[in-house]
Image (tube, rainbow, N blue to C red; front, top):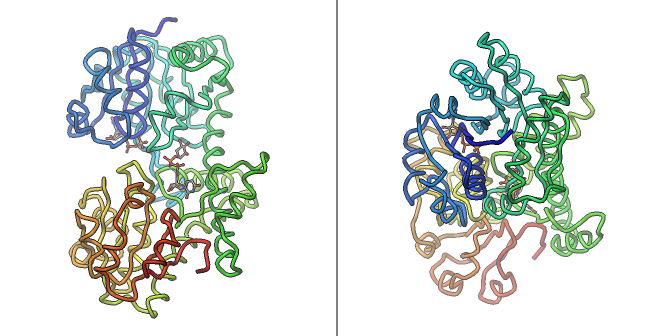
Length: 462
Ligand code: UDX
Ligand code: ADP
């Protein structure tokens, strides 16, 4: 089968960049990205893209209008497509059975129903959003009940790109994973999708599996990555107590090729839309399938991450003489990692919540995150009413201004620009003693201490 037309439902952090690269690398395939959110679609048509991702604008500019299109006409997109990607959000459920753990699949279900309703020709439907194992079966059931004679093949093609490096990851992926039914029709569909990626990804990097293996691999990959961070973060607490240095420990163990050096950077805690959600999902699945020991094992990765965020905030409060009430605390960074404007599950939200509970005056600067996103994050927690959040948290557009007269500075996101600041100037304008809490270990601590700062850092015992 020759693929001529692709539709992607959902123009977010996953759908947008992935489709931009597919379109760039396959100029003969029309790629239509559709979304229910008209503002998002409008933004994709300008040079002010709705998501910040290095290199993305160049890719979009080259393909947009040629074979990459953004639209709110979902029905038309579906009807014309040979392959439909489902890239809608799958947040953790906030209600009912599985609340706080299971994935909320109502957006996916809506998509499947819409595809079933409007399709007039055979389609390959690809799960791109992270989904619980066996979701494909649910999608299949919805699609097979149309009575229209249209045939659907459901594939799982999980996304492994990381935000901030999405374009790099898409250009040169470690692997592309495609799972499908092992029937002749299923294998044909797998081949069709393989041909799209094979325009730029070497064939040996395209892994073809059974449907369920592909779905479970996505959850497992994220659980393993998150587990490494929780493991090193657990050791960071021990380092602080014993005088060992967590960066030295991470380096020493990471040189063992069996362990490897990646994802061993101790931090204030991992954030992002995937890690916590996927592990909670895995835990829920294990419980559902009667595997409480396995569930408890993975749950601990989340528990440790929560502990790390709490520990960081408590350290600030205790160090500032057991109270931050009325004190100005400067927070550098709100995004969950550098080079993205995404704030989902960012440690900043939880750390600032602890500080605000203790009546601190938190002033934040982030180079990419707008104030309205920060307030929305805090409002979502529901700890205080929105007016109170706006009273206690101030968003500042200038890093030197944010640190002026502060009792302490906290580094939450590892933005490169923080390393280039004039720290002497910042020190001179702060309250004394001037504390700095480096939640990412990105600054030159010795230099800061020489200036006069009192430095506290993850996994260090200065
Ligand atoms: C992750 C997976 O890496 C990606 O494959 C999957 O498709 C989606 O989820 P993402 O959440 O975008 O990607 O970012 P990632 O780089 O994995 O970082 C997640 C969090 O862990 C961030 O808060 C980051 O700062 C933190 N982190 C990462 C650490 O604290 N230490 C590390 O060593 C690495
Ligand atoms: P992700 O990180 O998984 O890409 P995002 O929240 O960034 O998640 O993007 C998901 C997108 O899917 C949003 O832009 C949302 O408007 C869109 N969406 C959700 N449900 C539907 C639907 N039924 N039809 C079309 N678009 C949808």
